[in-house]
Figure 1 (cartoon, rainbow, N blue to C red):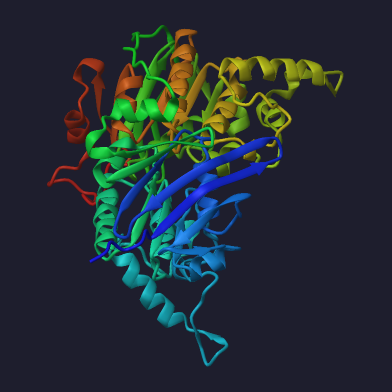
Figure 2: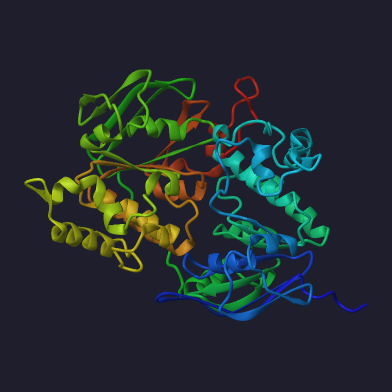
Length: 508
């Protein structure tokens, strides 16, 4: 029997935006039942290519074939009709609608030709979600779901259609290991049914576990197509970034005097009697399970919430933070987990986003000294290797890694004593990760006290001088660098059988 035609084939795809050649002669071939990785750094052209595949944008040059037939996809409806589904990295959900309504958004089921078939939609939504997370009630408004649960709803929405090609853009950025394993099973079932999967991820361990072949892009150009069974991770990284990354052993320090101390912090049931201290020049890591209270804890330290009980001291002086502004004035700043939602103002420029919290330093007699502001932001942007150095460009047009660098830039010249990173490299490519690690290390070496919350155990073990592990809102233990191992972290993070609350929590 002759081999079936490719499920999807792209030939010579090019796309130009004003001043930017996003794609130049890119080829991609994905076979039915194949899980194919699409790899490259932020800015390599992956997102533009996915937008072309899903009908959001049209190429300037090149051809697209589905099951051997040439197609032109003008709009997302045309792509869905052609059997292409897309799972976006940035969640495309409406917070006020429930999970079922979000899943059927744009293609609702109706009865009598005009009435929404709510029961039928809820029943079907429950069936699809059950394989991913049976604990999600499809009647729950999305705004009340966790980030991981919202990601599951996004994935389930794509699975509602009878797609022949599913493109997944960073589908596991918010998932726990258990949820990832469920997704692996589901993806493999889809592949067994002949569905072609395009898998985009910066987590190379996932790529090697799931995918057979990989297409690598760099600066909008096709670099190579690789059989992953015959490729090592360093070889793959070198293809992606155009150079070999050198992993240095970080110089660790015991730190200087205590800068920030918390005693007996309590907030609802999510933070329960937590005490900690971080010293000047020290990087303190915080690990734990989903729901363990890590983000809630650093939110208290950064003034996002007010504790129900407990005390916070900065340089030995008791503080009460009414809001993040009061924490910043005391010398504490947060780089948040939800970069798009909580960290940036998308329509404003890099200059405005970076300069906003410290405009007073560029103000004289009530007037902003724009030249001084631009000079300071430019110097900080150079320090973090912002690419491109286009300070007037809206921040939404930059890659995730460069957006994160911009958020960090806010605090480089601000006199902040404590900088808190909540998931510092979420959704960021491997090259940008290395640069952000270097920035964090430099800040610590300059005397800043650093707190890092991370779901990636390798990351939090690499960066931290000490590591606190949370469980059920409490501190379960502290590990010195000499005690680090994934087993040691998991032993502290997972509740024992004789302990409530739920053992269903998973390492995020």
